[in-house]
Image (cartoon, rainbow, N blue to C red; front, side, top):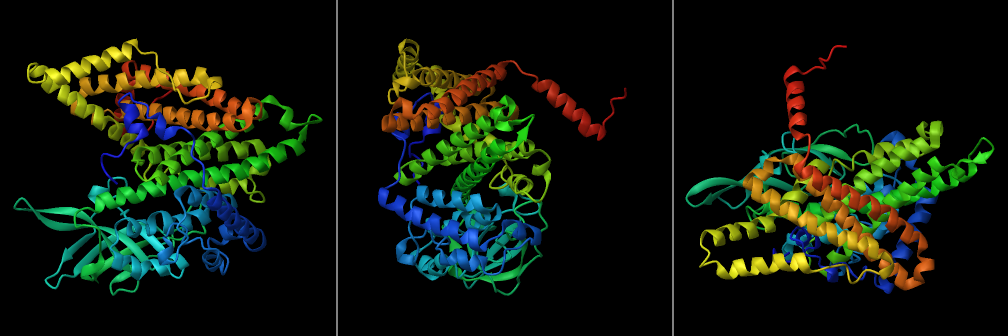
Length: 574
């Protein structure tokens, strides 16, 4: 992916709205949509007749033949090109199937996603033709399962601190040593994408740089630990990997030496989006059950669906699901274009959907009352399964910092140029003139989303107004803190949360606009209700977050946290 590729969110940080990327809302090719329906119908029938999610959870393993059945359904080769035996589906089509898989059980999408979204993704993106022909046919057919190995006991979100090392030998082979932890599919996989540090000569100095490798199961010195005992997603495989002088062939390197971090980031972009679409699939299935239960369950001689507090829960879960779905499928549409940088968008989708999914699972148990707490019903299992989503594929805390800092990069470079121009106004006259014109334009132009339907004008105007305020706040923070902005994590979190809400507003406005064009305002009235509920809350949250950039309690928070860290106990006597 080119570094200069356009990005909706990176442009938004600069105060620019790339309407042409968001409108009209993307749709699937009809022929591919028919294929997806065939696959999902087959998947649903298989699950109804052959898969017991509660049994898989109880025994912490899939029933015999489950992986073979998924392979027969073609689920392990959905994103693999046809020339290697796959279905070559678009990102949108893959996500649709993935969502249906998640509606059946929480572990199944983890296994399929661990294989397709991250396990073999590096091979698809960076593998040589020889590597692809060697491995992809078996991976696409499900004959072999794939896994992605980055995390270590001392290296989670801080990927640069990994200790696994690969050293090139005189004959061109590599000697791999180290340990990986919590590897999805690790117990079943035979193909591994492993990230390791490799010593490189750079400017006369030897430095360690991360490199990606293909590692085959069965190599001498490569062993696996026992299956981990997990809170949720219990049927999926999670183990540690150990490498003790494992010899890798000279052609085992994936991509260029020292470019493994880039490989990992592009792989994780895919994995994060899969988390989001999986949550959406699970949420839609839960909503169906909740609505049915609320209509059947009676208290005080009335269905509980008639009580406003229950209605509010169902409405809130519905809105959250709709927004997460809108964001996710706007992003898959960007991927399917092939010319867009979607790194921020995928991170935003993962953060929003995973937190919405956790809230939904929690509220579902609450709405069900005592029944929701019992293992006889799926809601307690859904709650346990949902808890991992804000953690893996990058914790939401780290992703918020990534969203804010990656978004600030371009405005920071622009302001750096402005600073140089101000120091030498004659030499920088042209740049200063452009800057002055852009500021005048911001003041005198009454902008709005021209592509949004007129019925949504109130919310599209709110969106454009707060994009401008967001941009100005970003500029102010960069000018005030400079490089020190990296350490202002509470402030960065506010910028990230503002960016998430702005992307949510844009996705919803685009989707509802397309819906109105398709069925008219009356036909889209419930979509418009969702737009009103979400957008009214979103712009208020953005306003609050931007205000708290200047007025906040961060100093008190830091002081109290430091006190508790020093004391390591609660010491506030009554």
